[in-house]
Image (cartoon, rainbow, N blue to C red; front, side, top):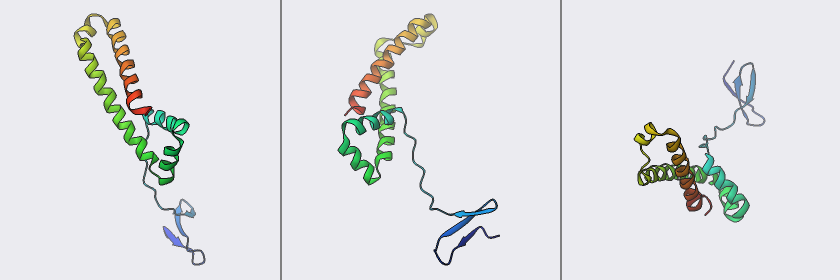
Length: 124
């Protein structure tokens, strides 16, 4: 049996899958996954910036825009955590000496970095 056949009447192309011929669709390029930052911005756009959301959606650029914003936010977040940890003196030495204090300070730094990213990138 042939892998692909074309119907003369409709012009549709069929692909053999197992024992059945199914309509062969054009392969769409896979979309990049959107992380937590992109999802938060998506929700913000949908609720508060409806025109921008509609424009991105109708032009087909929404997923690329959100994936790019997610990458920027991830990079900014990790940079901020490292920078804030250096400024506060949270080091591996502290981690070895007092783990609970290290966890407490790192959680505080992560929360501060998260607030900065949310205010600077996500909710704009």
